[in-house]
Length: 211
Image 1 (spheres, helix red, strand yellow):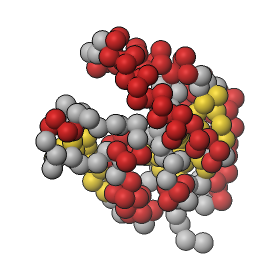
Image 2 (tube, helix red, strand yellow; image 1 turned 120 degrees about the vertical axis):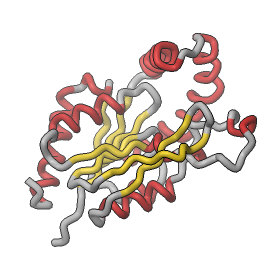
Image 3 (cartoon, rainbow, N blue to C red; image 1 turned 180 degrees about the horizontal axis):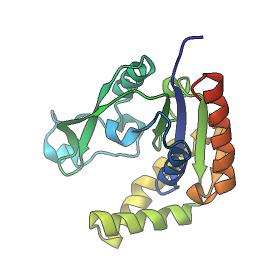
Image 4 (cartoon, one colour; image 1 turned 90 degrees about the vertical axis):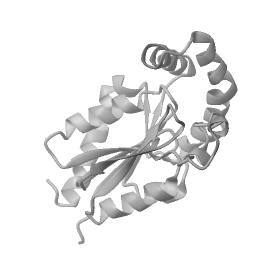
């Protein structure tokens, strides 16, 4: 059987704990051949638009992502070819001229709010996870992150959540839960679910003769 990397998809709403779950899985297999590919790095290049237009970008909508490039890069990694991962400049609201060199690995964790929304991405995954966390916890986590790390005001965070984040979650992110092989409640705090997922990933790797 041809050697092929295993792809683990980790989806869920903003503030759900996707990153915690991803980090926990990564730590479980630390020392093995594993990498994390974040969908957030693949927002579309908007350099052709005036800055005022870029400010209107809805980062929680599927149209914001350049999934064509993401799929192209995953295809290269599946062939054990290296990629130049794009970098997004949130200050300029467009793609940076910088890239990050990524070497192929035997396990690829693909993490992002909408990685289960695109059928083409789903078809590449060996296991699909959805991190399911109550809305009140998600908004608290998002509020703490945006205020502490991004210097935003409480009012601006709440306004964005009510007008953009919540409706986009209900329309595009929540429905992708039905595609998940495993639903993980409460994110990185659910150690039982993460241990079960790690066991499943190990089985996949053993079947691929990676361990």
